Each structure stands twice: as structure tokens, then as C-alpha cells.
Image (tube, rainbow, N blue to C red; front, side, top):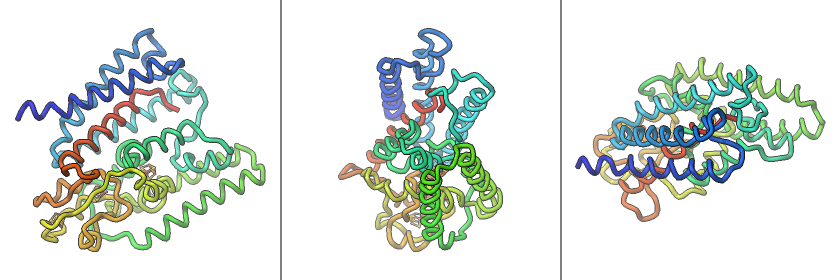
Length: 324
Ligand code: SF4
Ligand code: SF4
Ligand code: SF4
């Protein structure tokens, strides 16, 4: 039993180490932050981060611990990101991956490339994670969503977010149209930056006014256009979640889903709705073990383990990299 508990940590340790070693060896510019300060320091950081990844999965392998540890680790992720960005902003550009500053607002992942007519590093990173892990970007890899997770507090309310499909599709269309129009009109970068900034500040206001009140991640579920893109394209990755026949319709799991993906109607349909990010919080609320991960024909426990290994290794690896 004890030996079993260490299998997943060993897998995450190994995968994180291999991923970061690849970055360290194959990319000429030092991408591991410590390497920029001490020659060979990158290897010490890779070792530490791999141990961190192993610790995270050690804690999260029991589904009951997922809501607590996902919140802690996602918050750490965000703190590391914004601390590095802040230090970069005050002039220490060693902390920045490209040496150039980008607005840390997820909307820029879509709007930026449309406005500039070229892909950014962040957009490539985002597309890669959606291909590898489906919606995990929106459960523990995004620097901004962690705030909405905090704002929505502990257990969620049973309030259903009405018209979310229509609202989020409209906002996505508006962002795409706005970026293309700004480009077409040759609007200067500084004005476009202010528009993006206003969009980001509105997002924070939504967290304060609506997520805190409804105990659901209203910003991520209804406002952020990147979340909508994730909802639309997450199925290019084969991981899924479903509810099996043992479900008693007790509805306890609805109190655990901050993404408004487990309303009574979703439970009767035996699967979470489109806003599900496969975060796994709801497993902690189901005492009948009726909510399951699916990956082709793998057994549900193996599918979950595989998902945890991939997402936590990516989460840990991203922490080690210098910021954009
Ligand atoms: S919905 Fe937007 S802010 Fe929320 S986690 Fe996803 S990308 Fe980040
Ligand atoms: S349904 Fe479960 S896995 Fe999906 S977002 Fe909600 S809590 Fe997370
Ligand atoms: S907590 Fe489990 S048994 Fe109850 S409704 Fe949710 S999936 Fe069904």
C-alpha cells in the first residue's frame, strides 16, 4: 500500500525532470530561471521543482484532497508568475522569458495574435497545453484564473448561472471582432493596450461583484474568452469525465463545482456540461464514487492517474520557467 502511494509521485518527478531537462539542454537561451543567475543553477531548480511536483501529486492522489491542494498549488503558480512579472516590470528583465513585457491578461492569448497578425510564445504554450491536457489550462495552468478560484471561496452555491452560453459566445465574438478591427484601422499599440487593460480590470470587478457572491467562477465561466475557446476545443484531447449508473442523484457534487458544470440537469445527463475543466473537485463530494475520468478504454482510476501525472507535471514545469 505504502509502495503504491509513491508510484504517482515517482512518475511526476520523472516526467517533470525529463521535460525541464529537455528545455535546459535543447534551448540555447536559459529558460530555467536559476540558470540565468548561476551557471548550472538550472539543474538545482529542476531537481527542486520535480520534488515539488511529486509532493503535489502525493497530496492530490486522494480525491478528497483535490479541492484544497488544487487551490493551494494554483495560487502558488499565480504568485510565482506575478512576482516574476513584477520584478521584470521594475527593470530586471532576466526574469522575463522574451525580454519583452506582455499584458498578463488571458484575453491577450487570443486578441494579441489577431491584432499583431503573428502568434506569441504564450499562445503557442496555450495551444500545446490544450492538445496535451484538454481543459487543464483553466484548472491549474492559468496565472489569472487562480484569482477567480479564490474569489469564489469554499463550497459553491446551488445558483445556476443563467444564459452563460449566450453571454460567453457573445464576449468571444466581440473580442475577436475588436482585435481585427483595431488591426484593420491600424490603431496604435498603446491605445489597444489600454483597451486590453480595461478588459482585464472589468474581469477583476466581475470576480469581486459576482464570483464572491455566487461562489462560482463567474469570470472564468461567463466572461473570459480564453475559457470559451478552451470549452470549444478541449475535446481535441481524449480525456473525458462521466457519471456512472451508481449515481443516486443526491446532488452533493453540485456544491463542489465552481465552473457551473454540474447542475441537476447535467447530472441527469450523466456528464458535466461544456464548462467542465476536469479539475476533479467534484470527486471529493461524491461518496458513491460515481464520477469518473475516461481515457479511451483505460480503467477510470488509471485514466485519472494519467490525467493527474500529465497536468501536475506541466503545472510544475511551467513554474520553473522564466516568465513572459
Ligand atoms: S477562463 Fe480565462 S482566466 Fe479563467 S482560467 Fe481559463 S484562461 Fe484563465
Ligand atoms: S464537473 Fe467536476 S471536474 Fe468538471 S469542472 Fe466541475 S468540479 Fe471540476
Ligand atoms: S454526488 Fe455522486 S451520487 Fe450524488 S449526484 Fe453527484 S454523482 Fe450522483
